[in-house]
Amino acid sequence: MIYDFIVVGAGIIGMSTACKLQQSFPGRSVLVVEKESQPACHQTGRNSGVIHAGVYYTPGSMKAKFCREGNVATKAFCTEHGIKYSECGKLLVATNNVELERMAGLVSRCKENQISIEVLTASQLKASEPNITGLGAILVPSAGIVSYTEITKKMVDLVVQGGGEVRFNSQVVGVKEQLDNITVQTSGGQFEGRFLVVCAGLMADRVVRMLGVIPEFKIIPFRGEYYLLSEKHNNIVKHLVYPIPDPDLPFLGVHLTRMIDGTVTVGPNAVLAFKREGYGKFDFSLRDAFEMLTYPGLLKVLYKNYMVSMVELKNSLYKKGYLELVRKYCPSLTLEDLHDYPAGIRAQAVTRDGLLVNDFLFVSTRRALAVCNAPSPAATSAIPIGNYIVEKIKKLNL
Ligand SMILES: Cc1cc2nc3c(=O)[nH]c(=O)nc-3n(C[C@H](O)[C@H](O)[C@H](O)COP(=O)(O)OP(=O)(O)OC[C@H]3O[C@@H](n4cnc5c(N)ncnc54)[C@H](O)[C@@H]3O)c2cc1C
Image 1 (spheres, rainbow, N blue to C red):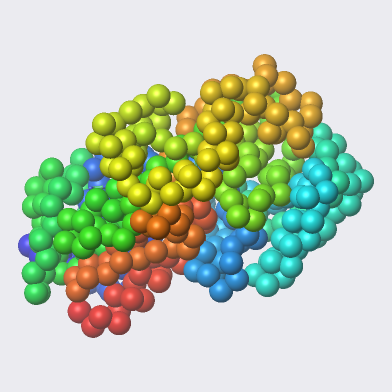
Image 2 (cartoon, rainbow, N blue to C red; image 1 turned 135 degrees about the vertical axis):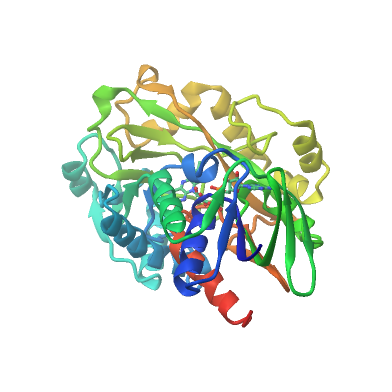
């Protein structure tokens, strides 16, 4: 059998793309191949669960557009399929004068990105969140929380109900592109398709290489470590509470996150990981570490961000340092309140020149399209990303 479409990866982007392919090409066959035994085992199942609004992203970028659209589309998907979500809103809190200045910049950015916000004074912040201290804050009412694992599982069900196939325990180990079709070799057998979509997250560059393309980037894994707050703190905040970020490193700064199961986490930090899918603090892969440490792009990133990297590492190893990050805006928390919680690993594309690729990135060949950089807010943006991929495929007139 020759499948019309083969999708690699049953994370949220692969599944959203598979759903959209089925909707847009009725009657055509779709196969998803996933190396794990279930969906959402990696980034999709190990994140903060935030439905972002799109505050930070460069106006006009794919991140800004897809996040804004994805915020609406994710909530609509949940409503349609009975998946629980909460529009709890997000507070970005300034704790010193530098952050107050940065806050003014973020207010302008929200306007450019057409995101409705309210600006709160210190006393309005205190009235809204008695356990949070700050000089002022931005309230983003449309931000919310959900389980992206639940969404992805529902997408698997939809694909299967629509006549598609999702094959687990099938790791792609080779790809051969011919003029009219593409052969995908997996640990669960060989499949023929007319078009391949690669949504392999932390392994994106390796699967792209199988297509015969030398990627102009490498995926560098950054572990995001969390702590779970004691149960007595499940109502410590009503909103998601974030620090105002450094505009050059917007993904840094741990936040208090209400989770959809009613618990509250703090995190994530960003520490270089020496194993792409190794979630323990000291997990190590010789192959992954060797590839990273011999990659000029990463060495340049580390050189440029030496101090920041060292501080992140220190706070990863030294719980008291981590606690101080959150005590900046939530001073009542103590060491006894922080409990172990599973970490996640971000797949960040880095160029040879040492640039962290900022926007979503796609690479195409004649019979394949690969998602190459899809860090946060890609879970929020997964439905628009799937739509974008399918629009690209439609133009190919396969
Ligand atoms: C700590 C952390 C916090 C985050 N917080 C948020 C947030 O709050 N909100 C938000 O919008 N985004 C967040 N993100 C980002 C978001 O989780 C990711 O952008 C999104 O999940 C990416 O989805 P994906 O499908 O591309 O990748 P993944 O979920 O990693 O899926 C890729 C899949 O491909 C499979 N695969 C890989 N190689 C192969 C192969 N050779 N053969 C077969 N299968 C293969 C993998 O097993 C995996 O299942 C966060 C990410 C992290 C790590």
